[in-house]
Amino acid sequence: MPEIASACRNPECEVATTGKCALNHELLDSCEEYGEAEADLDFGDEEVHDDRVEEEALTRLRSSDLLRPEQLWPLQKMVPTTTVALVGDFRAGKTTLISALYASFRKGPLAGFRFRSSHTLTAFARRHHDALLLSKRNSPVTLRTSRQDGLGFFHLCLRNDASGDHNLLIADRSGETYADARSDTSLIGELVELKLADRVCFLLDSARIVDVEQRHSYKRVFKQQIHAFLDNGALSSSTVLEMVTTKLDKLSPQIEGRDLIKELDDFETATLAEFSDVSLTARRVCALPRANYGVGVVGLDEMLKSWLAPRAREYPGLIAAREPVRQLDRVFEYWSEA
Image 1 (cartoon, rainbow, N blue to C red):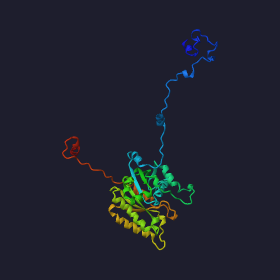
Image 2: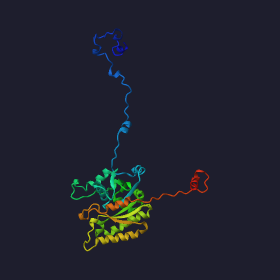
Image 3: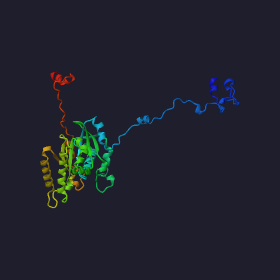
Image 4: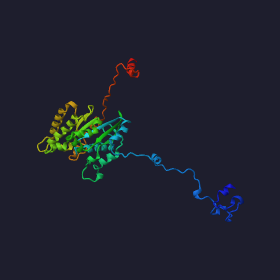
C-alpha cells in the first residue's frame, strides 16, 4: 500500500504494512498525521513573476498630449504629413487659431474636410477649454503657450472625399522664444520646426496694428522676424511663406479719424513687395471674435484649404557614374537601353 505509506507523516506508524493507524484511528482521514503537509506537497513548477511579461500583456494607450519632435518620425514613416509652423510674438493668436480649428471640427466638416482622428485630442481639449461656457469665464479666451512648454506638435487626420486622408501637424512654441531668436540670431538654429515645416505662417496681430503707441515698432519687428529667418538660413527654399493677419474683430472701419482697414492694406502691400523674392502671400483670419462678435469666424476654411492643397514634391535627380567599373553601377545605362 504505497499510497498509505506516503500519506502518513509519523515515522513510527506501520500503517503501510499493517493497515492500522498508530494512533488507533479507525478512519485514516480523521488522523491529524495522515495526509501530507502543505509544505511537502508538489504543486508543479512555481510560476515566476516577470514584470516584463505583465507589461507586454497590458494595452498601452496614447496620452493624446502634444507630440514632441522625437515622436514625429514614427508617424511620418507611416503616412504622408503636412507640417505648418505658426510664428508670432506672444498673444499674437497662435493658440487661438489652433483651438478654433479643433472647435470647428467638433461641429462638423470644414472646407470639405471631415475629422477622422488625432493623436493629440487631450492637448486640443486643454487649449480649447477656456473658450467654453463650462470654463465659467466672463469672456472666451485661450491660454497662451508658455516658454517652459518647449516645442510640441498638434496632429489632425482629416478626410476629403476627393483626395483621401490628410495628416496635418501644427507646431506650437511660445512667442517669447521667437522674440528671443529675433534679437539673438544664434538661437535660430534651435527652432527645428522651421526646417520641418512645409509652410511657415507669420502671424500679424491686428490689436497691435491698432494700438497707437506700439503700431510703428510692431510693424518694424514683424518684418525683422522674417528677415532674421531668411538671412540665417532657417527656412528651406521649398517652404511656403505666409503672412496671416489675426484678430480682425479689432479692426473697426474708422477710429479716431484713422481708416484701420486701409492701414492694414498698405502694410500688407508694402511687406509683400519687400519679400517678393520669396513669394510671401497674405491672408486674414478671425478665429475667436471678442471685440466685435458681429465679425464672426473668418478665413479658417480658406486657410485650411491652402495648407492641405496638393504640392509638387521635388525629388533629387539621380546622376549615373561616368564609365563605371562595376556592372552594378551601369544599371542606368541598361535601363536607358531597355
